[in-house]
Image (cartoon, rainbow, N blue to C red):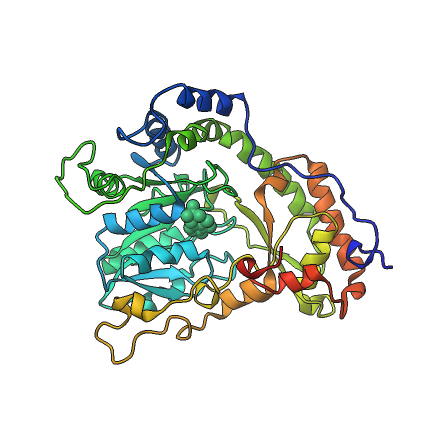
Length: 432
Ligand SMILES: Cc1ncc(COP(=O)(O)O)c(C=O)c1O
C-alpha cells in the first residue's frame, strides 16, 4: 500500500465538486411554459424561446444576429454553407480539436487542411496558416480551444490579405471576449455548441452568430428545410434540412445566459487562486497569459505536464493518479483529429479528396503536427470548468492533490492500473 489512492492510500478528496449541468427555478419555469403551450418544436419558425435566446446570445457576444440550431456540429456546417463553401473547396482547421470541428467540412464534400497548433495556446497557429493556403482555400476555421483564443488579430489579417472567410468554432468560448469583442463576432460567423459539457447547455444544441444579414438568412434557410428566411432580403433558395432546436432545449438556455456573467466571475476568481497555487511546481507549467483575452471562457482549465521534469513518469500515470485522488481531469482529451479513431476517413465517401489527383488525399497519413502531438499525447491536462464554479477550497483540493501525486510520484513507476490503461486511450476507445 502506498500513499496515493491509486496504490491503495486514502483519496485526498471524497466529496463531489460542483455538478454540471445545473439548473434553477428559472429553467423549471421556462420548461413548464413550453410544456403547457402547444409549441414544442422549432416550427412555426422560430420558436419563442429559441428566438428570444438567439437574439440575447448574439448581443452578449457583440454580434447583430443569432440563430439556434440543434448541435454545435450543425452550427459549423450551416456556417460553412452560409459563406458558400462548395465541394472541393479547402478549409484550414487546427489539428488539435474535437472531430466535430472537421466533420462538417467533409460532410459538405469540402477538404479540411490541418495546421498545427501554437504551443502557447493549443489553438490554430496563425504563423503556419499562410503556408497551407492554396488556390482552393476558401476559409479558415479557428477553434478557441480550452481556455484560450486563436490569435484573431493575425487570422483576420491573413484572411483579408488572401480573401478568405473566417468561421470561429466557439464551442468552448461562451461569453469569452478578445480585445473586448465577443467570441464568434470577429469572423464571418461564430459557431457554438450547447452539448452537455459546455459552459451553457441544453443537453444538445448549438447556435450561429454573425453581423451579416445575408449569412443569417442562408443559415435560417439551411436549417429550416430550405424555407425562406424570416427577413428574406437576399432571396436565397437552397436545399435545407431540419436542424432546428426544439423549444424544450431552447427554454433552458435563457436562464443560463443570464447566469453566465456571474459564473464567469466565480471562475475567474477560483482560477486566479488555482494559478497562484500552481506557481513553481516542478513538472507543471501554466499556459502563457494572453492580455488580449478580456474575458476568460474556460471550457476546460488546461495546463502542461512535463514528464521529463518529474522523473519521466508519463502523463497517463499522473492523470490517472489525480483521478483516483478524487479530481476529475483528463489527459488524452483530444487527439490530432486525423489520428483519432473517430476519423476513419474512406476517400470513396468524400469524392473531393480524389478530384484532380492520381491518388486520393489520405488525410490520416499525410500530416505531421508535432505540437498537436505533444499536447495530445504528452503534455495537456484538462480540468472541467465546473470544478471552478465552487469555492477556493475546491481548487485548493485540486492543487493539494497535484502536490500529493508529485510528492509520491515514484509510486507510479511501472504501475499497471485500469485508470492508467484508460488514459493511454482516446476518449472514444476507453473502457467504462
Ligand atoms: C471544439 C468543438 N467543436 C465542435 C463541437 C461540436 O459540438 P456538438 O457536440 O454540439 O455537435 C464541439 C463539442 O462537442 C467542440 O468541442
